[in-house]
Image 1 (cartoon, one colour):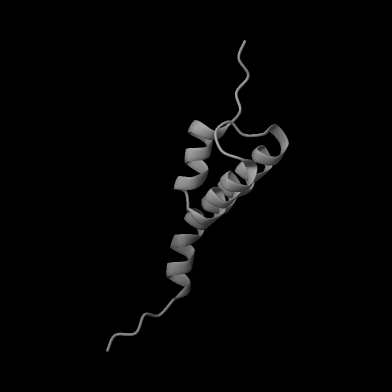
Image 2 (cartoon, rainbow, N blue to C red):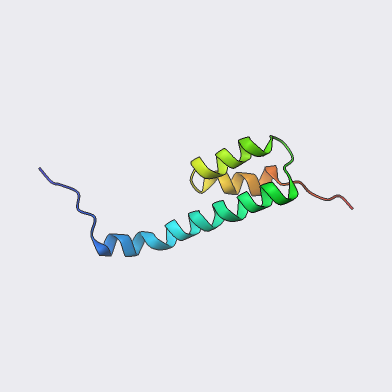
Length: 70
């Protein structure tokens, strides 16, 4: 059987994606709790941003942010 071995080469290749995911999640969580949300409540958007990788924070930035109308 072929066992999957997590080498440092694989970790180095995945590091930018992991940092992007973590950065987006933190950015969105700060936005959710400081500015508020538009469609769902804060808890729901927080859980979406934490548990749905990359797609959750991007979805929040597109449809969930509270916008100021001028």
